[in-house]
Length: 164
Image (cartoon, rainbow, N blue to C red; front, side, top):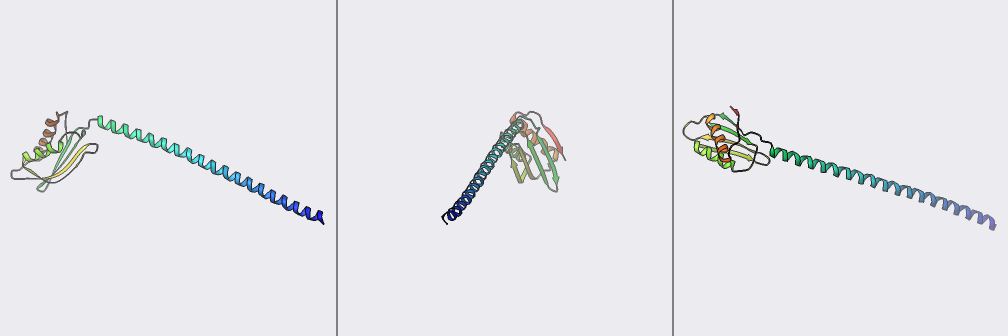
């Protein structure tokens, strides 16, 4: 009897030991998979960081090139009813272009009804103006704006791109 009991106990112990070893192997395999997954994620993150850095360098080079590229001044004037729509764009954003343009409008007797100005990378302005009193032509407005910008900043050529 003792031998039968000992055999059963030994067999049960072997089964438990076999299960523990199998569990240990599966835990070890799971741990290896987790470590491998983290390693892959780390490599992917480093790759994305390099790509992001490259895009930043390209963006900075683009803005530097944009700063040094001279886009000619462009003044477009269009008459709609009694109002004139004046669109101005210029490559360099420094200086007091807005003030100079508003002074030119004042000299011509134009009243600004609405205006929007942007100077994030380039100077650009769109204004709606109305003539006060004497009739002012599209060509007069265009030439006055170009003259104001050129004379004040030392003028380096201009483009009367779209006189409507």
